[in-house]
Amino acid sequence: MLLRASRLLLGVCVAAGLACPTMAQQSPPAPPPQQGLLCDAFTKAGNGDWVAKKDVMVPGPGGMALVKEGVPVDDEMQERLDDRCGTSKVLRPRQV
Image (cartoon, rainbow, N blue to C red):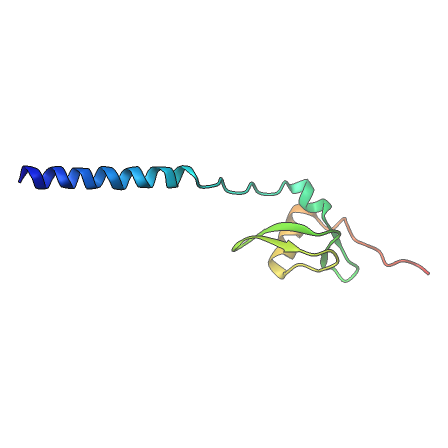
């Protein structure tokens, strides 16, 4: 009985020892983008869509996502940009 208990204790210690270094090596979560930086990366087109002014990483439901320059964002991100940045950054069409 004593031998069985010592083997169990040894097994628990080995398992805990293997788990600790793994937990220590996890990278920290990415910080959320600052509000000003997010607003500076987008402009509101004449049709009301938010469009990326440059390639930018934005938080999404599955993690960070790349939005390429000139590409409008999805409806959820449109609403988030409206809430954060307002509607003052409207890009006017050029007059020829």
